[in-house]
Length: 205
Image (cartoon, rainbow, N blue to C red; front, side):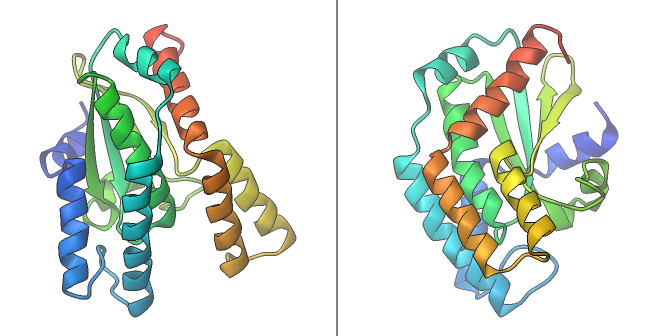
C-alpha cells in the first residue's frame, strides 16, 4: 500500500466519527476545512439536514446487497470529503448503507480533504480537488484497486452541460443538482460502485 494512503488511513474516521466531527464543529459555528466562512458553515448545516434525511430514506437494492456480500475479498472504501461539500452529503449516507449491508466485506473510512493534501493530489479530477473521492483498497493485498468520484455519471453530465452553456457554478445549477439527486434516489451511486467492485472481482481492472 502506498505510504500516502496508509498515512491517511491511520488518521481516518468511521462514518459515525465523521458525522460527530462535523456536528461538533457546527456547534462552534465552524465547518471542516482550512477556510472558514459563514457561507461554508451554512452549507455544512444544510448538509447535516440532508444527511439526516437520507439516512432515513435511502434504500439499498437487494441486487446490490447480494453482490456486495459475495465479493471475494474484503475492501476499504477510503473517502476524501469535507462537511461543506454538497455532493459528499448526498453520497456518504449511501456509501455507509452499502458498507453496512456488505456484512463486513467493506469498511468505510473517511478523511478530510484539507488535512490530506498529499492524498488529494493523487486523485485529482481534471486537475481539480473535487470531492468526494472514493479510493477502493483491497485489504488482503493492501493495494489500491480503483477510485470513483466526485459524482455519478448523470450528475457529472448535468454539471458539464451547465458549464458549457452557462459558465460558472451558480445557484441554479446547485438547485438542479439537488433535484437530480432527489430523483435518482441513490441508485446511480449504488450501480456505479457495484460495477467497479464486480470488475475488480473478475480481474477486469
